[in-house]
Length: 274
Image 1: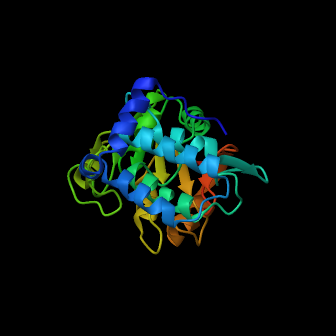
Image 2: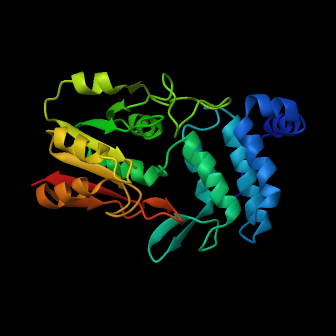
């Protein structure tokens, strides 16, 4: 696994920050929460790799956008393994670790549930080329920001934009952006005009009976859909959504290099209306 090369100046900054618990608590409370928990949680068994992960998390979650435009990926990338042709964030251990699982919850809340690797962003850029991406349930807009940087036009919406409402999944937290891309609310989503030259993007739409995914698909009049999430019966999407896919859509493409957390079963798939 590649080691993170810090400049001397950045190393001094981090040393000073980690020596100042009061400042860390005020400016980066989630980083402090992680650092307080790690001694109590089992790691992967590779102490060097675990320490390297900790350094990356602290560096990228306190460094701001000048250090990375995709900090989520830069934190987890060296911890990706390939198992049975599937890329997973597992720290080199098939079942991950409790420590990595705790980091997962912090990173998902700070950025997004799914991991936006450069390869998946490129796959989406190709599948969505020439069309406007309409992301429903965009959360902090982290994926929307990555897709925009890749050259796509993205309109992102959420029922609870984290910068203007209290979104329980993406709470306001000191030291991290509320949003990475402009997020429209329900009224904007309902009022938007459509010319059919669009791709509906659903990235980890809520499951457990929530009908958001099926409602978004029913209201959409374009010809292409990108769904990132688990299969029917998993943590994402509702039964009506999957039934509608089976009846009215054809699987056109699947990203073979998609990266998932080891304990999840999500994939990235592109669908075309029949």
